[in-house]
Image 1 (spheres, rainbow, N blue to C red):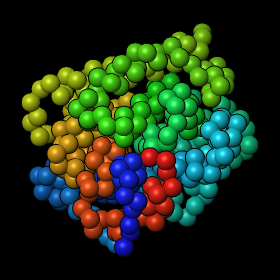
Image 2: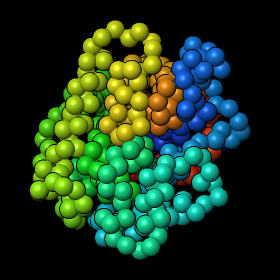
Image 3: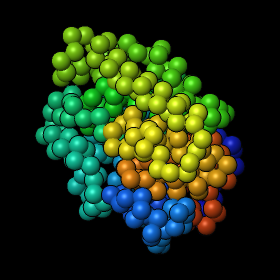
Image 4: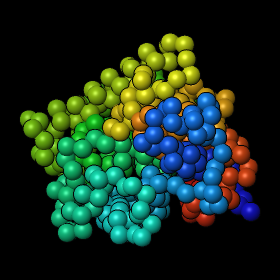
Length: 338
């Protein structure tokens, strides 16, 4: 039996971490399937039950755990301290025999370069804004740190593998969303709050965390480099607003907000699922898993968001002992500041 500390902050941390893993597990078998194929297998509501004991997750949860343990081990939150810890955890993941869950090619390519010991700004895949950096950033949002540190950590962990400015900005927004929810914001408030963050941060280049990463691009200045990412995230958030303003037809949200293979689409499609099903947390996961896009990443982020708002009470009581890596998830939730 897994027990959790009773403070509301710890319940929300546990709810977010476990929610990420639950969504990942539900979306794992549906990734690369059409909606019609998913519905034939699971019914019109999509998958709503964990399968297996343990219920297996993908690289999404594995890399979120890598980020979480790197942060756990850090004596301080500064780039020179955290970067080597992230590098070591990512490289341990890359060579692990458990890294057999269709890992993303960007992460594998970047890890191959990181293993050579080169600066991460050279190792990263500079033109990639895949969702791989977004689905693992939840632990950053659970830290009790100031917003500048949260932003720096979110972008640093993204930048080690995904060097495109939109990957950086979307990762920061995902972590910020988790922070807002842990602090008491409602899911329905997130689109507006995230859009405001995108506006205020548009030309903020965090050189103390990113170094000269911007020089890997064609941008003439660091401010113009990072503005590309915030502008693309802002556009995606406007698409989310439009989707939420229309009646929900129960169909695939990827038709409205994107398939989630890239960072900003994963963010907004997961938010769509979470907001539409705020009163049915498992339904939020199922909606993410019942998509034609990157089902496991969408469902994982949706679970992280719903769990951050509602805590462990969001999830069926029997799931906590059945999910893969349950011991690590519980330990990290108990050790966290939130």
